[in-house]
Image (cartoon, rainbow, N blue to C red; front, side, top):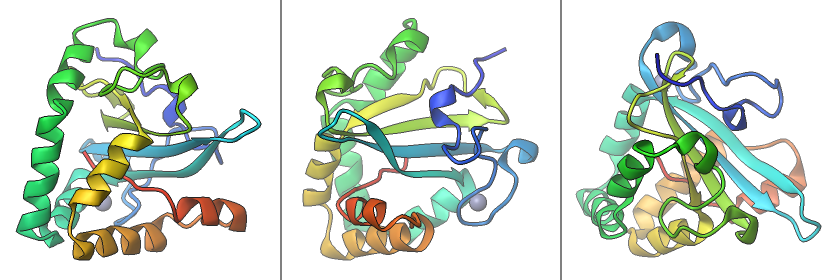
Length: 186
Ligand SMILES: [Zn+2]
């Protein structure tokens, strides 16, 4: 049996795994369908690590989002992930003892996360388990910024709208921080 969902992906609010798809609100653990969880983290000047947003999305909803994106943006995103060897590095991590490693370094740059101010945690799951061969990863904020620079203004707007619709935290300070944050869907 594959590994359970790492606790870093649990909801900060409930202290339990996130069960609801952010878009269709289906119960992800009961559905038995694959889904992704993404959390955006920020290290403050004081050294605390804040969660800027947390969300789970089922694969059908992720695909719907993807279909709305322009062909140009889809291609740009695909080419960018290819150029940084994201998939190869993720698969490579899955062949190692990823359980001790995945949340300590950026999977792309290898930088220790302790030296990175912003990073995203991304995992793909079925039920309460990691999908075998696809380990969870941490990606430094720098990688996401570079991606944002490449996509079209329309796609960026669409991603911002999604963020504002689904990922709004209640705390105004967090909201301000979040407006600077990007997310990726894998
Ligand atoms: Zn959904």
